[in-house]
Image (cartoon, rainbow, N blue to C red; front, side):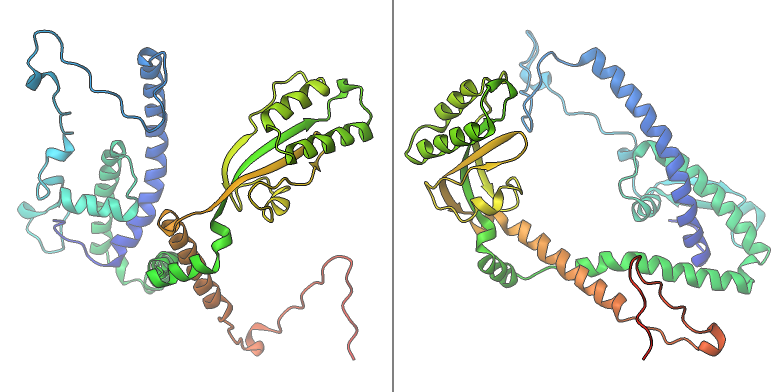
Length: 362
């Protein structure tokens, strides 16, 4: 354990020191890791890429090697073998006032050092721990001397500590509000029922008719051609075949894109086209839509409703975020201090936006 802690001076000052130290040490650590990993990758990268989220197969044991000895688990890191109650930082000469010189030492265990690091930044890389520990020891020594010289008795310090404590609590409040804003299962089910259209999925095909300059067709001819393609798609012709034909007709050099867009739901489609796709039923064809580069024709092959189980986490996150934001917004908007104008002066008039004039007083 930490042999002695004092009061809020240590905690608040260390918070500021830690952030500054962490920024410096992390930059150096990240740069070094990037360089090392780049070199290693250049030397050992395989010629083929493993598919995403696929675990590599376990290599077969070498000839003559017993199966039980062929594959061994990775050795634990040195830090993980140190007991939690083991002392990891020792600072001679730092101790509370009145401690005999022969006993004047401050020690920190692994458990307390890791609690401190996790409280400041749980994602701090292990390579930065040494630098932070060294800075931590220096801070404890300076803190010790400040107490002995009575710096903690300065009234100005007490005010600054109070303001910093308020600031830190205010910064942590949104996290606590979000934690307390988790919805119940009944609320999740109610939201799902009220927003069922949001979780409807469309199996889409899309035919693209490019406005190719080499086609030789006039704009009205190209539009008429796109309309004809739509009519044939509505009659049941294969979208892939129609798109290939469209690319040939417009003499487009590029290869036709895949017409199969897979399953899409509201918010995941092209925002320019989504409003005209959502009302479509299974088997229906959209109107011809266009932009400066092409005409677009969509076909809804089928529709389905996503089950609650597959969108449960999505809904929980949405409700939790909305509720937390509403709580914080209400808190801020309700703060309307009344200031003594005899001391602060009258509130300055707001400058109207450019182009608007302040209405004359009646």
